[in-house]
Image 1 (cartoon, rainbow, N blue to C red):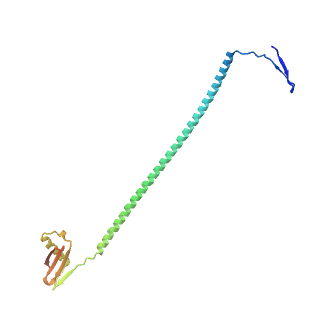
Image 2 (cartoon, rainbow, N blue to C red):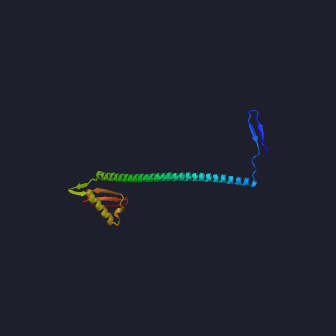
Image 3 (tube, one colour):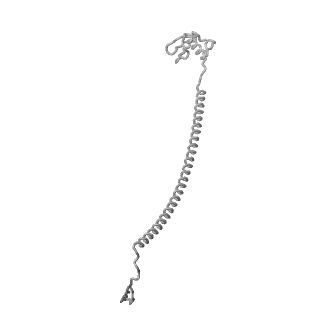
Length: 187
């Protein structure tokens, strides 16, 4: 083959062109391309595997951290719920004690008030004296009740009672429930 020389004007360099290279058969080029593609595929596959491994490790790490945080949050929430339940129980106990104390104080006040009212109620003892003889009010009322029961009535049915004393007649006249009238001996 012939060699050609070309000189460029601007740089005054000489470049030689020649066809010293020999053409390769198509089959060998195909093999080289296949080998190059396989090598590229292997490198890409390795890089994808590395990236997947790193992503999996990152996800696993993140999952672990999330699980730990969730566990911490659940534990703290459980503690808070327990604290709230304890406080509610304490408040309920306090309220129960307060109600019992208030009820006891109120009952004591009512009892004291009732006793005071009983003490304050004046129950006079009345005596009737006439010509050297004497009769007590309580005895007269008991005699009236006994006479009423002797007539066939119940003592519990007495709602009202009026008593009229006539010492000159030695009699105590009575009217029970505005219907029944009678008399008993005064002395």
